[in-house]
Image (tube, rainbow, N blue to C red):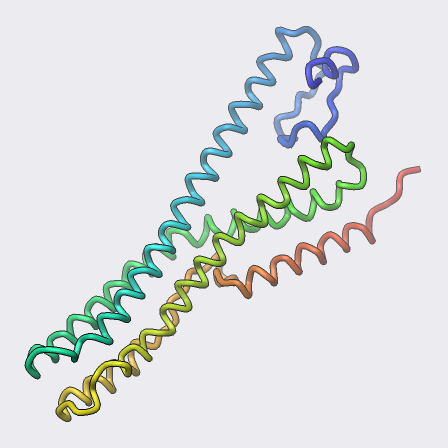
Length: 243
């Protein structure tokens, strides 16, 4: 269909292809001129999708691993005072706290690496959703189905980010209570004092950021959907009807 349009009408329906900045300046004619252009579009689309899938998998797997490590740390705090002598229990608490500091260090480094790219990635996804929704009314039936599938895939992809980022935040908020869940009531004043100090120092919110403004959690995901709908309504109200 794309080749027939380019050979017959010297143009192509924009709904068939999304890479407008690769659009040729002059009309193309002849199959040998058309095929290299279509091949270039295919290679660009393949590399873009491959990069998107790889980056999404890396970010989501990192968040899942971080949430799992924090959950394991919470369980270590709960069991730190179950067995052993007072000195061993004291060392267990110190070891748990060192693990907590190490998790904070790793999370800060990962957040610095992922935050700028994640911000651009999610911003482009939000704008794409708004633009696709805005263009649905002018598309053919086959293009509407493809656009609707793309919107759903963008929403699911963003949900993966924000859901697993929210899990990291949720698990980090349970660390302080996990310290209190340990068997500290009948322990020596030295152990109880250490439990009190640790419970007040491990209450930091561990969360990933998408840029300088957005936290990666479910609340931000809902806000982005609201902004997408608002942007769509704004485009509908400001669009100039064709004569």
